[in-house]
View 1 (cartoon, one colour):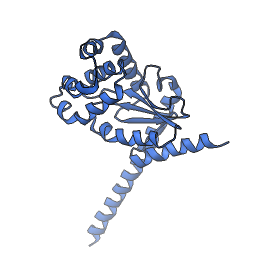
View 2: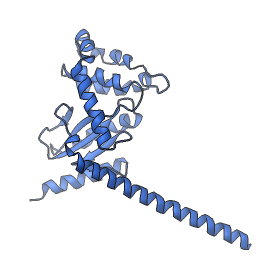
View 3: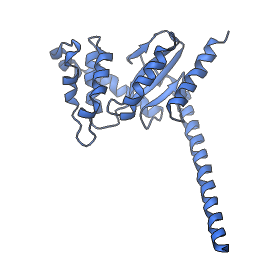
View 4: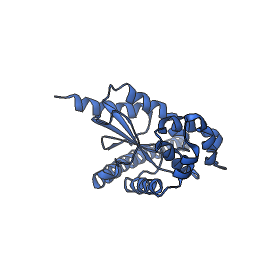
Length: 218
């Protein structure tokens, strides 16, 4: 009996140590993310980044986004609904974090569509078809061309634009900023410069609401 109590006590100590360790890890991660933002605030928003919502909105959600990421796909309608329900107070700035094989090519295709004013329709079709082209064991981003063929694109022009130095340069800048801001997973969110360190839909909505409340104050 005594040995059972000792074992239970030991397991309790281990559990408490684990919980404490996780709390310390989260706190350190939050501090590191905040320090990275302070050190490179210009890395959050670049002139070349796609913007959804009111360009003059006082609250900015910056999302480091991977077109091949299933969680990014799941969060897209959530973030879009947050922006649409904000009455112009919130905007989304998309930055790329191509962490999966083939994602860099997917970005190039989407950016080629943006040059013809078809970015958001192309993005939504690519996300809808993500399970077909983004299988992590066998990514086939070229299939995105089929997904976006009905958006009204000049496909010959888009295919040429996808390989342009301008798109390659913008993607390179996003990757550099991703590293500078210590974004290691997607989607990575910042709201008015504040990193979302405790990930989840409720947490993102809460962070946005906090920032909206700040800008509403006289």
